[in-house]
Length: 152
Image (cartoon, rainbow, N blue to C red; front, top):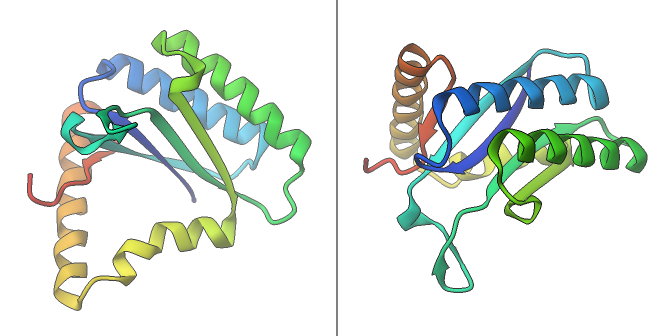
């Protein structure tokens, strides 16, 4: 199963918008990148944890992996279609959306990097936090989301 990690500002979008966004990201992933099953993980970021130009600001960020040697043409098609779909659902400006398509080995390294810097206790605490958040959100909202702050 392929993973896509999407970071958004807390309470920026409605639950229905998030479900619609999840569907179009999956559809575009399967159209342009791979027919494999896709799991979307929503990272819900509080406004206090995002800054741009020293001011509170959180763009929407979509991170995903692709096969090694993925063509630039398909990458651009994915960027364009995903941006079009995202902005039509959210009303967000295209410059408020960042899409990152990274070859799978680097994407896996990106996903594993934070956990690799933790002690065994820290890794256990992080995994338990994520598990609790993901299960709780799936039950209450219908999609997998987590707050990346372990202290919340």
